[in-house]
Image (cartoon, rainbow, N blue to C red; front, side):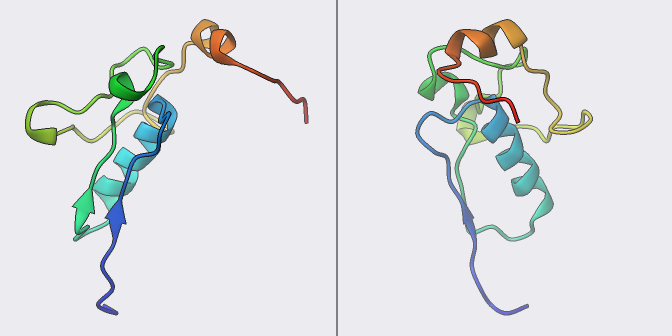
Length: 88
């Protein structure tokens, strides 16, 4: 409505959590000018989700339909990559 363009980009070290959040954003916001993300397998050594969220041929990736972010995090994988834990 305001004529502003929007783009979605990935981040270095993007895990499945950020990939899922970006995928939801991209599938819910109309007319994104540029979209990149879901580089999961290309940017991290160990996947945190049970599902591979890396984009497919031509950069396409399906919308996620499960509850919450639509992914399940592997607690053991998360523990292996945890550097510091803070209890709130």
